[in-house]
Image (cartoon, rainbow over all chains, first blue to last red; front, side, top):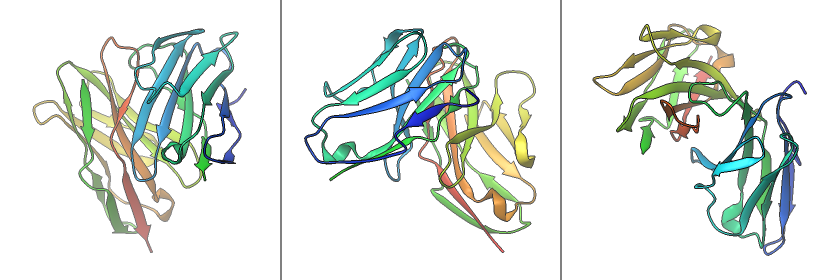
Length: 115
Length: 114
C-alpha cells in the first residue's frame, strides 16, 4: 500500500477484555516495529520484526502483550486482560530492512482506551 | 543504552519568529539522529536525519538541525515559523550498526500563534 495502515483507528474496551491491533506495512518493507505512546510521554519501543522473526521483544511491558507477523506482511499486536494503564496510542512503523539509519515510516496509530 | 532529553515540553512562538527546539542525547556508542513531526491527529513523519558528513542537516518544510558531538546535542531550528508548523516534534536516536530501533524523547509541543 501507499503507507502504513493500522486498524482499528480507535478502540474502547472494558478492563479485562482482550484486544487485537492490526498493522499493514508498506509493501516490500521487511522490518516492522510497534511503539506505544501514552499521554504526555514519548514513544516507547515494544517489539520489532525482521521478516517474520522478532529478534527484539525487550519492550513488551508484560506477558499480557504479544505480537506476531505472517507472510512478512501483516502484524497483529494482542493485549490480553487489558488494564487501564494500557490506554495509549499504539503506533506501527515499517522500513525496507532493520538496519540503523534507514528511514522508518509510521502509521497513524490505534487509539486504545480501557475503561 | 541510549536516552534522549528534550528540554522543553512546550514552546509557544509568534508567526514568522525563529524557533529552536532543543535535544540532547546520551549514548555509549555512536548514534544516528532523527527529528520526527506529528501533526494533530496524524502519524509521525520524518523531518530530517543525521547519519554522517556535514553536521548541518536540512530537512523538509524549511527545518534544519545541527549535530554537535562534543555537546551531544541535535537542536532543531527554523528561521521563520508558520501557523502550519504547530505540531509535536520528537527527537530520536538509534545506535550505529543496530537494528534501527529508535529511542525517542518525550516530545516538544510547538504552538505558533498569529
